Image 1 (cartoon, helix red, strand yellow):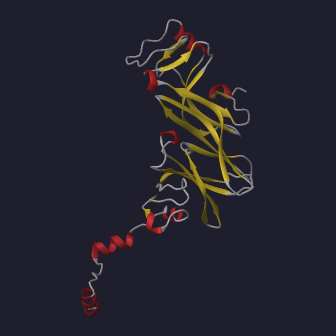
Image 2: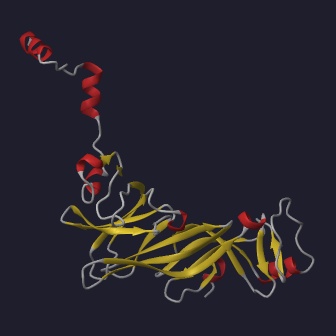
Image 3: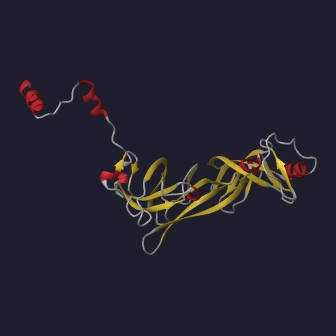
Length: 275
């Protein structure tokens, strides 16, 4: 044993022992490496990132960093299983949320790269069954621009075209807008009968083809109050309201709603049980 140690020292190789050996032995493999290897050369893989993704925005050197958010399900009509993984990229501007999602097809224990989807990200999602063969990916979406947060509850629809390319689109059930970042308070138009501001806590619904979600909203009575005697003026106000607009400060309306995925109709959870 001493002779082997002396030989290693003579060759300039230090044998691992004690804590150093234990650390090397116990180092967990990078779970994202097999996914990155489908579109990235080995030398360009750094942790969960690829410093130069192949085929990304022709002619540009772009990085792709995989994020923890990912969803797997039978999202295609033929029952094929897809894995959707969010990513960030320095090549993407604010308009495309600084990233997108990488789509993989999972087959025989392997992940097959099916393309990038810049601008699309799967956040705050749940998977529900469409039928015995296919799943549905339902998500809360959001995009912030000039202080206005536009959001909604939508189904992400995956289709495969004649060239075997997988396309992604979104089918919205409900949408809303939070203007707090623009005005310091949410705003309604007095001609509206209701308005949704934001969504949270998406979950399974009480029946088939339904989901449940918390919605910040103003109903008819809230809008009437805002446009009549008004609510207490918010402490910090930015900009100017347009004609026929009124402030609705945060905290005045929030309820649990059920969304029917077949009709896109949303109703308060308490009322849904009375049908």
